[in-house]
Length: 191
Length: 396
Image 1: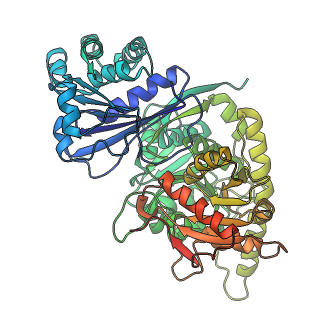
Image 2 (image 1 turned 180 degrees about the vertical axis):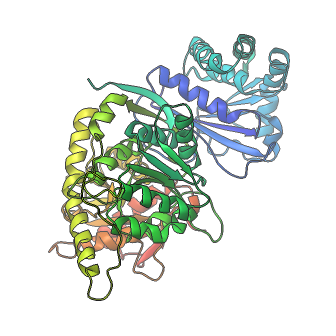
Image 3 (image 1 turned 30 degrees about the vertical axis):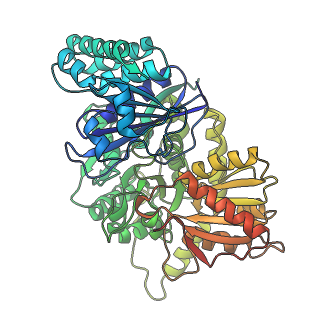
C-alpha cells in the first residue's frame, strides 16, 4: 500500500456512503493504520448529491480538508456522473469504481478517462436488492473497493462487519451484508 | 497503571468521553450545531448511569452559562459546551464566570457567526470571547481535543489560577471527522484530575459563609479584582505548562503551549491554530523534502498568549505568515496576527510578517493554499514586497 490513500465517495444522501467511508476507516484502524473518515456536511436532504472522504495511511494523517486529488473514487449512484464532476483531481494510476450494470469500457468512455486510470464496475444495487432486499449499495461497494485497490484483505472487512453490525443488527442482516460484500468482491470487473 | 485504548471516533465523541471521565457534578447545556453531539453523548452517559452528573437542560445558552455560574459558585465541578451563536449569547455570563473566578470548563465547537448564516468552521466565535478572561486552548486534532479537555480541569481548578477554561475544537473538521485516537482508562483520568475541593463554596457550611459577585462600585474593589484576574491568568501560564508536562508523562503525547515543526532552522514559517496547523505541516514536509527551509508554529494556548515562546521561535525567520480564521474588522490584521506581531516588537531582529485571513465559514483549507503561502513567503524572503497588510487567502 502506498503511504497515503485518499478515497472520495460520491452518492446520494441515504445510500449509506457516510457509513461506508467510516467502515473502511474502522477496518483499516483494526489493521493498525491511521485513518480519517468524514462527510462533507451541507444541507441534509434525502437523494441530494453528497461526498464523503476516507484517508488511510501507515503514518499519522495531518491533513484536515476535503480530498481534492483522490487515489480512488467510488460512485454509489451512476446518475451522478452526468451532474457531478466525479473524476475531478483523480490521480494518474488511480481507480474509479462505479455502481452500474454497464461494462468498464462504456463507463470509461462516458467519463472520458485515459488509460492511466483503472475503471471498475459492479452492479452493487442489483446485489443489494437480492442480498439485502433493498437498494443499499454501500456495503457491496466496499467489497469492490477492496478487490480493486487491495487496501486490505476481504477477510478484514468481513471480520469488522461481523463485529460492528453484530452489535446493531440481527445475524440475518449481518450474513446478508457479508454475502453482498463477498459477491461484489467476486463480480467487480476492472479494465 | 495507565492503559490506553486506540479507537476511531469523532472529536465530539472524544470530548464527551473526556468529560465523563472528569465526572463533573453539574452540566448545564443547550445544543447547537456542531457542538450537539458532545452534549448528546454526555446526556446518554448520564441516562446510562455511567456518570453521576446533575444534567440541567436549559432553554438557552444564556441560561446554560447562568446555571454553570450558580453551580460553580455553590462549589460544584461544572462543565458545558457550546458553539457560535450560543457562545455569543453567553457573552455577559462569560465575564461573570471569570470575574467570579469560577473554574468552569467549556468545550467550544468553533463555528462562524451570522450573518450570513453559516454552520461551518471558523474562529470568529472564540476570538470574540478572547477578552472575557477565560483561558483559551485550541485543539488541532480530535486527540488533542480529548487531552485538552482533561487538562482543562486541572488548569481551571488550580489554586494559583481559579479561572474558567474554554477548550476549543474546529467545527465539523474536528468535531465530526472520525479520527484515530487514544483514550485513557477511567481510573488514570480520575486520579489525574482529582477531586475538587473549593475554598470558597457557597454551599460549604463547614466554613464561614461567603458571598460571590457582590457590588464593587465606585471606591470599591472592582479595579483590584481586575488586577487579580490579570495576575491569575498570567500565573496560569506556568500551570498550563506543568499540567501539560504531567499529562504528557502519562499519555506520552506532547503538550507545549506552542508546537514547532522545523522551526530550529526555518527561514519561512507559518503560524496557525487549530486543525489548519496540520495542513500547513503536511505541506511543510513536502517542501523540506525539496530542501526548502520551512517551519510551522502551532499555537495551542491562545490565552494566556505565549509571547516570549513565540518571539523566540520566530526570531530567526526571514518571513512569517500568520493564518487567521477570523476577522478583526478595521484592525491591522486578524486576532492571531495582532498578537504575533506584538510578540516580535521588542526583538532587535524581526522577520517580515504577513497576515492571511482564510477559511471563514468553513471555506476548505486546501493544501494548494498552504503551498501558495509558502511560495509568497519565499518571494518575500527574496526581497518581494509584502502583499498588503492582509490577504484574503482563496477568496473568490
